[in-house]
Length: 241
Length: 345
Image 1 (spheres, each protein chain N blue to C red):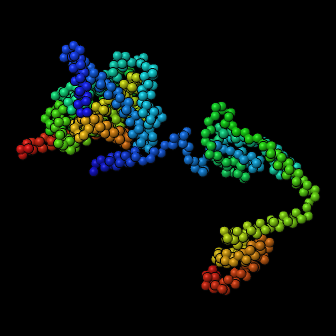
Image 2 (tube, one colour):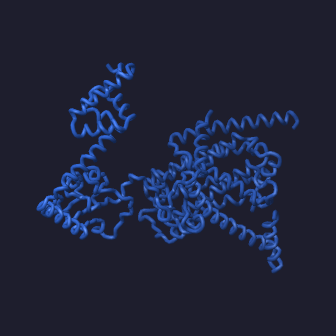
Image 3 (cartoon, rainbow over the protein chains, first blue to last red):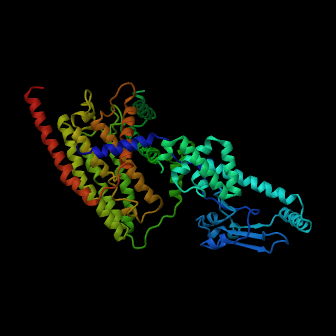
């Protein structure tokens, strides 16, 4: 029939006429921004390690910074100023992606209008409290070097080891293929082992500790456990051979 | 309520006669007052219509339309009119001044002249002409000349081309427009708009002449230079065709005239096909306003729905579709009338 398409079009516009308007009345109503919205590029001064990756990544040379050698005993360079010349920024986020310490981020602030051209340039100066913090830290390391504490070191080692074991234990649950990949080759074996360890927390703890301290011993223990398990469940274990 | 406006007229005439004026002079004053009323209605309507058009287009496009000036933005058009009136009046140096100045004036005069015969309620046509419909169509076609004057007077080849395009379009669509009205005239046997309304006491002619109504509506859209047939203006493609060189109030007069024509044609559509001022409960002059506004809303709905049609398609739609269809409608109507007469209805 002639005119059917016309009627369809008119039905659509009529329907739209009575739907909710999508206009946002901007100055009174604020737009709802997505989490990843790219507003003004901003900077965490304390996180920055002055590595310069951001300035290399930036295609428009928006970013620049000044830094100087670290205080004696510290590794982190002293960042003095960090400048974001937003007028050249094209919000590509290459700097945000490359920053190893997540110092750069896009805020949700999008009203970038300025009265003068220079105002759009954001210069971050070194906050004085950061100087104080760094000086204290430098003093502490210096003291530690002069008189290395007897108990402090082993205690620190112990804490570190315990942390590693915890991490491996978590990995055994979350990603057994990767955690057990170092001691087992066969996928089916890994799956079986993971099931066993998930069922028995004590065994999991032992295996985790061994994985951290002595991989050779861990391999043997795991092989033993596996053999025992296969004997107990011949059908399931047999499938992998 | 029904007689309210007529009573005002009678009271005015008798009052003037009471002051010692002769009957002829009193009638002349009444005529002037009526003329003033038409101009007032036209201006008020245009202001409301432009606002309405913006609101309707906004709603159709899921926007809000004007909403800052006054409640629901009703004063937006007033502000725009102010702006247009304060703008500089530019007449291009090479222009034919007489034609250039005359064209918008004649355009609006012709548009206002249409209202003389429209029955705006029971016994409320200003002049009860017995060739009212013929008058309406012939005066309506004069606006073509004004467009050509504007295009020629601007001394701009693009304006002239735009004007010629508009003229081609309007001349082509006048034919189906007139033909589609003939069916109604044949049924009523009169060109008097009052008679045509009276003949629709029982049934509206939109039911007896649906094909004619559709042809009339399409042709009227083209005659009014409205979307999807707004080739003469085509603001996204051309710079307003024949109106390119016009500024400020002169340009606004064209705009005013276009909306005036819109009201007139919508009123004609409701008079011929939708029973005119007839209707229950409400007074007759309110009924014609309601119907006219409904027809205008449909015109707006069409404009904001369809994309602009191509020029050659526009021409072939008129000559190859609308004219044959309206001719066939006349033949069928005539045959049907003879048949019913033979059957003794």
